[in-house]
Image 1 (cartoon, rainbow, N blue to C red):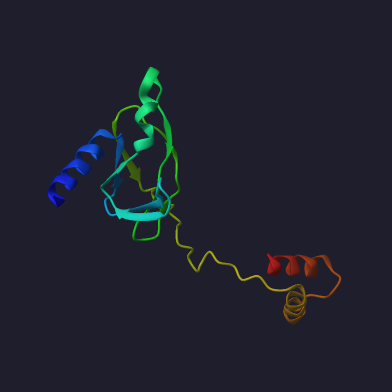
Image 2: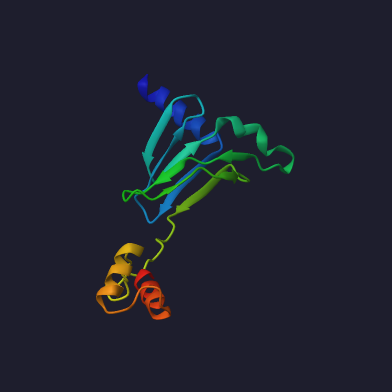
Length: 144
């Protein structure tokens, strides 16, 4: 009896429109709210059926759904997106965005800025007389 029930469920699921979700690179987990309530999280690839779309393909209309969220093990996440489903069996691949490259900052290029009072004291220690143009240039240079 269980086998007959399982076969009937598989046949019914095969008739409902569905989307095969994949990820590039593989390994993403998709998650979101299930159509019947509750939430889910599955590893890709995973086929999700949308029984409510059965009537949506009439008259050449491509129904729109909201995709689940995809998350890779390193934490990179793609939020839900609006998808148009134009075939009873569709496929959608979540493509992980490339990381933004940030060049390392060399210590040679890092300039230490000092406060105004500290710069004035240092310029006086270097022999500049307070109130002169040279003193002002020295303070300005040290606070850059």
